[in-house]
Amino acid sequence: MADVFVEQIIKKNLSLGGLAIRICAIFLVLIGILLFPIIKLILTITVTCLFIYLAYLAFVYTSVEWEYSLVNGELTIDKILGKRKRKPGETYDIRKATLIAPTYSDEVQTKSEFLTKIDYTATNNKENHYSIIIDDVDGVKGALMITFEPDEKMLDAMYNVRPNIFIKK
Image 1 (cartoon, rainbow, N blue to C red):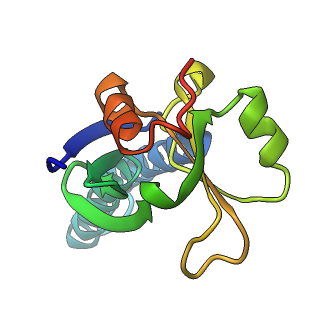
Image 2 (cartoon, rainbow, N blue to C red):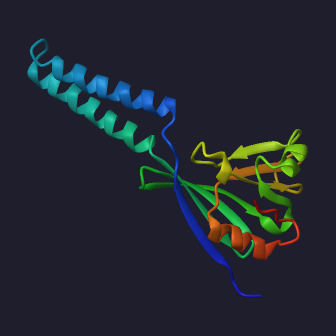
């Protein structure tokens, strides 16, 4: 069997919490600027620089992308913050999966009631959400349901790994 390598990066939509953090960061910078006439100059410049740096961090760490990598039947999902920092994610063995199907299909809905659910989706477009159900995962009690948003290339590669459990739209 030939080696299979498929990779996909998908940008996560900004959540309400992330938006609130960004607005608070901008508000802090404005407060620092407004302190110029009130407090001593060196202290104000220091506080404003600190607030600007915190705003920068707020914007970087609220910009999230998911990277899906399928290598020889193993799906690895990493989190990328601000297009700079990679947080290693989990690796799932697709060969141990019992079902790969659209998340809102009847097959997934009937099996998903008592599963541990992990969501790696980036948008609210539920038509693109797929789920993988794996019964045997190290470190997880019971079965696991992974929800993510693969593209056609990723779906084709997963179909080639496990065609008998794959349900396409």
